[in-house]
Amino acid sequence: MIVRIPVSRRQFLTTAAASTAISAAGSIAKPYLSRAADRPLITHGIQSGDVSNDSAVVWARADRPARMLAEIATTDSFKTIHRAVFVDALPETDFTANALIDGLPAGQDIFYRIRFQDLASPTIVGEPMTGRFRSATADRRSISFVWSGDTAGQGWGIDEARGGMRTYATMLRNRPDFFIHSGDNIYADGPIVAEVKLGDGQTWKNVVTEDKAKPAETLAEFRGNYKYNLMDRNVLAFNAEVPIFSQWDDHEVTNNWWPGEPLTRAEHARKKYVESNALLLAARASRAFHEYMPMRFTQAEPGRVYRKISYGPLLDILMLDMRSYRGPNGEGLEESYGPEAYFLGPTQVAWLKRELMNSQATWKVIAADIGPARGRELEVADILSFIKRAGVRNTLWLTADVHYTAAHYYDPNKAVFQDFEPFWEFVSGPLHAGTFPQNALDNTFGPQRVYVNAPSTPNRPPSEGLQFFGHVAIDGTTQVMAVTLKDVDDRALWSTTLEPKLG
Ligand SMILES: [Fe+2]
Image 1 (tube, rainbow, N blue to C red):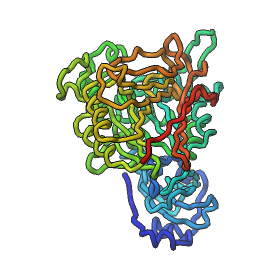
Image 2 (cartoon, rainbow, N blue to C red; image 1 turned 180 degrees about the vertical axis):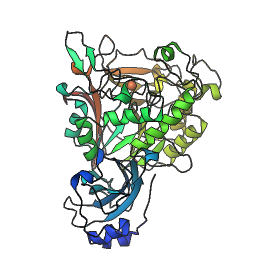
Image 3 (cartoon, rainbow, N blue to C red; image 1 turned 60 degrees about the vertical axis):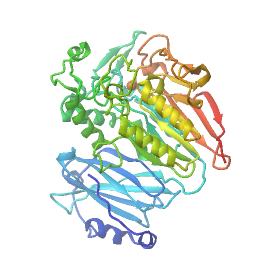
C-alpha cells in the first residue's frame, strides 16, 4: 500500500515547522500520554529503497493495526520537517507499510523518522526509529554502491556466536550510496534447523523460527522468511543506513521454478510440497516480497519487479526479472524464438531495449538475477546485438547467482555468436549462504574468466569466509568506474577500472 501526498516544490522549500507537517499528515500534533508497554512497536527495523534524485520508498512493520507516520528532514535533529506522509499498516499486509516519499531535494543526506500510531487508540504513538539515505544527484557527483545476493541460503541462518550475517556489516563499513540485492533475498524452500555439523567437528547453531522450519507454501510462511532475515542485527543496522534496490531470483519462490511448473520433481517430493503448482507459490511469494521490500509500485502491472532506477547523470540501473516471464525449463535448445524460449519475455525485452536506447546516463548497469551466459541464448543474443546496432555505450552486467565471485569478459572474437560489442559481467555473492565451485561456462558469447574465487567443494559454510560482494565507484569528474570484488572481511580480492566511451 503506497500513499503519496503531492507537495509542490515551492511548498517543499517553504514548509518549515514540524507541527505544520505533522498535522497535515496525521493530526497528532496534540500532546499524547501513554504507558510504554501499550505503545505500538516497530517490529523489524526500518528500510529505504529505490532512491532517485527526488524520491524514495521507506518501510516499516508494526505489531498491530497502526498508522505509519514518516517524517523527512535533511538534518538528524529533525528541526525542520520537510515532508510527512502516513500509510496504514493492517493485517492484510502483515502490518507492513511502504510509503513513497517524493519532492526530495537532489544530492542530499535525507533523514527519515518513523513512528506508529495505534489505530484503535489514536492518542497512543510509539517510539520513533530514524534512518537515512542519500538522494541521487542531478549533477555529476562521485557515487558508489555495492551489490550481492543470496541471503540465508542452504540452511545457513543466524548463528549469533559467529556474529550473524556479517557481510552486511562489512558492506555498511563501505558506506555505499545504495545496495543492489541481486536476488535470493530469502530461501523460501530452505528450512533453517537448530544445528548443523561442520566438517571440522564444530557445530553451526542457527536462530530458528516456526515459519522457517519447512519450505514456505502459505503466505504466512513466505512472510516468515523475510521476518527471519530481519532478526539479524547486521541486516537491521545496514537497512537503516543504506537503501536497497531489490530484485528477485528463484528462491523467493522455490528452487529453479518456472511459471506453471507442476511441483513434481524429485526435490519437490523430498521437500514434501503439498501445493501442486509453482504459480500458486509464486503468487503468495510475490505478495510477501512486495510487502517486505521497500520498492516502487508499478500500477500498470502490480507485482512487477523489473524497473529502471535513474541515479543521476552518471548511472542508470536496469533491474531485470528473469523468473516471472520465462518459458518452461528444458534443454534450452530452441532454434527459433517463441514461448518455449522466453527468458525475460518479449514485453520486458522491448522495455529493456527502449530504456537502453533512451538512457542519457554515462553508465548503464544491467542488474541481472542470472548471468547472461546461463540464460536462454536467443533473447540474450537479441539484446546484445541490439546494444551494438543501436550504439548503446558503456553497459555492464552485474549479478550474484552462482554463489562465488568472478569477473567475466565476453569477447565476440571468442564466441560462437559474434554480433555484439565486448562487455563485462561481474559476479559477486553469496551474502550469507553456501559457496559453490565454479560452473562450466557456455561459449555462446565467448566468456573469459578474468578472475574467479570459488571453492573446490560445494556448500562451504559462511564460517569459511567465502562470502562475497562487489563494490562500484564512479568518479564524478572523470566518470571512470572502479569495480572491486570483496569478501566478508572487506579484503579487495580483485579490481579493475573502466573508462567510459564518451562523445
Ligand atoms: Fe542463490
